[in-house]
Image (cartoon, rainbow, N blue to C red; front, side):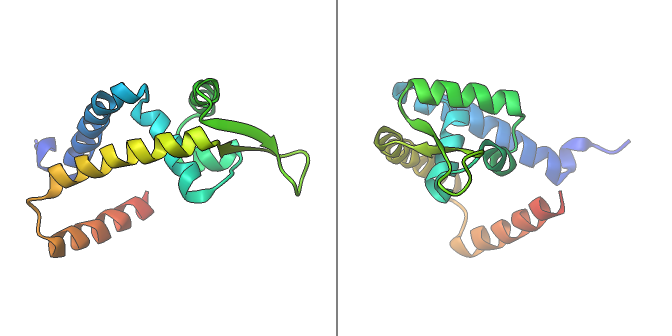
Length: 139
């Protein structure tokens, strides 16, 4: 029988799970979860989006996103608004508070990245990233 722990997918999943757990711990002082950060980061990168677009970007189920948005709205990090171009479309955007919490949480993410990948030469990081992106596009 094949040893699953010898497969790339196993380690990718393990790293993703451990990263999520660790970033949840590190963002606790900000009263922010890593899942909430992912929504804020998506909006920071792409601007105002519909819930459908956010779901496609961060790959969560609609009820999960709805709960995250409710929490972020209560914390005044996001606001829901009507599209200028189509009154039927509701968009989600960052508030100034949302942009500020993104800056603080982004520093945590970047510090985590540095601490966990510092031992990997830059040349190899670029190659690994290319292959991971290719794998992601095949899914």
